[in-house]
Image (cartoon, one colour):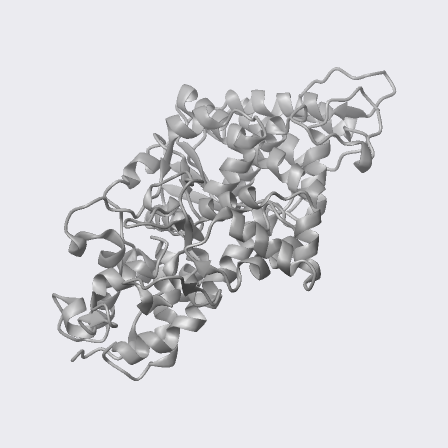
Length: 531
């Protein structure tokens, strides 16, 4: 029997940012499990700067881990962490979009008139913002390093940013994306501007405004002429997520995220050409990348050239080396170490029942079958186990049975969030109702019949039916995110590498969701334990 009580297990948090807040940098750095396919030095050196992966695969954790390495050398490495979703409110995002609208000088653009297509280009606005973050971070918290502070371009750039943002205190550099705009222009104190020594082409002798495009180009020009110095600067951008529910905001955020991706590329190119020790990196969810790409926006080249895909999948080999299971082992062993216990060599032998259910499924296989091959699933599953059996030091069949329903519910709740990128709240509720009670395996035609049958009773299903949502397209979306897969001797799921649904094969739910949707097998199945 195991010696570590589950209450003392450092299992972690489902959100990487929250885990760092809860445990602190040192513990999280020790708990971090580095995939063999990832080389952190690629990010520290600027060879890579896009981290891609499905929701819950550890993108934020990787960013925070890299940040912790940077924080280990505070005298020569500086950083700023930006969270797109939390740091930028709706007003800031709309202001950014206004800055990207092509317009004539002094032309007033109303919100309802702002186009939502790819004619908007916010790349320059994002570059201005990133430069502002870098300059303000260095000016406020450092005395030297990264850039030579005695040069003329540095002095002009620092003063110009302070002037146009009208911020005497730049300690919170991430909050304002761009200066306040009026009709696409920025009011500037000409007297103060003259003292800085920066010149613009004014629209008239009486004008005290300059177009944002002119200002942005000048800021990028000054930044591109700085002189590099010792020390490094890292900027981390996380939570590139689309607004939910509101179509207009959703379209806006697609544009903002697309142009932020390009702006990061351009800023890193400037750094490489000029020899700056400045590195900007970001994490991008696969479903967000797909939505941006589906709009015909060419972002595949920079992602391919400078990005990495986080995947916890292992094709073949010894299951004992599966990275998710090794991550779990590491957390048990770290917890033992913290409690002053002898480190267990075989965690699964010591702490777990050997096999599960009537099918005698080996425990390692059972645990993997409960996941979508993401660290978040492991953490969610064992957090629930820890909560219901915190005084135990061994995980038996009874404990696994107890947590199944709640784990199923919490897993579906996350998929509801993912679906709201594309569907309204009411539509997602309709999808849930339509899936509930299906017998597996089922066909696309049977799913369509379920929608027709339930539309008379459930308003949300009726809304789904009347909203021009084709059942086959809904199933494809559910397949893409891992809710369902193709049924057969070898089941096919997107998260296992089978990227496209086979419309000719029957369908089933992924095992953890069978219970949530009250699914029953039409014929005996060796995996009936999961129902």
